[in-house]
Image (cartoon, rainbow, N blue to C red; front, side):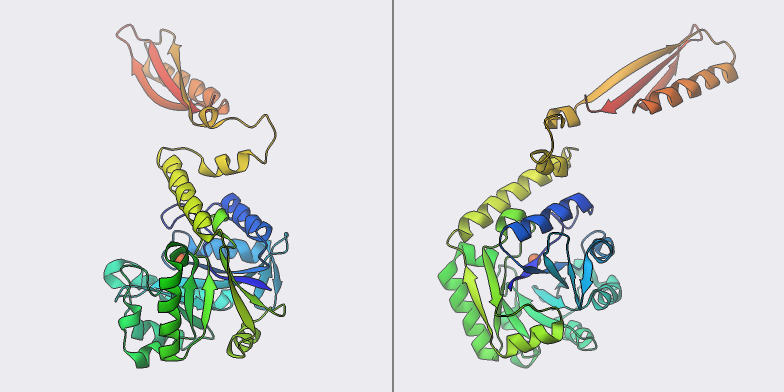
Length: 331
Ligand SMILES: [Fe+2]
């Protein structure tokens, strides 16, 4: 079973959850050759609960995991910031992850992130596998935490994004830390994007559908880590694509539509077609009585709404006529 221990189900934290984008990611994960992923979305991403609710209702439950219609196995998880700087991965049943996310609600802003010790005190009350995500990423301070605290972790993440930038150094640092605290190293791509799947993964000899079995395979060391020769290219491409899609969203465009357009028929409108704004004006005939004018405006607005137009403004002229301006996105 080829498993990616660290993935995301949304393009970015501050973007709304899109079922179409998530479906596309999960399909691409399977197409990349992975059998399974840990969905470790940021604990303070927008609509965290809706993402996990969507997976729960659309994929088939199998033990602690879910299987999508394309056959990808999903282990639920979460990535949480700590006050010292750094991210902690927690893997557990969807019920556990959702409950933990609720309990972390007061600590989702940078001013209120929990210190590592307090977060681990909370995690220890639950049945979760806990790992240090990308411990050598800039801005993080996990390796500097007291050793007795670090020993509370279950694994260290050899992170695809970091490995792609500096393979030898990150490998050396990660395995040294793992050696120091006597914990296993596992790997995850940390992708928010399709091209990054498969840049690094952990392969187990058997198919696993529970966290108990997963923990057993990890402690028995029955797995290998693989790093793609194309990892640097995959991560760089993903970064560029992610940035471009975020820009499209910021400009009011439909980034999901762009991604999916190559899968749809030739009649799919182009990007320009989808994002162009067109305007229309309507003149209301001479209506000296206010209630008569108001009724005509209402009727015109209702009629235009059926054609997809939104009312922008209404002006009454000195000659008791009305000018209405409407707009619609798309050609
Ligand atoms: Fe991440």
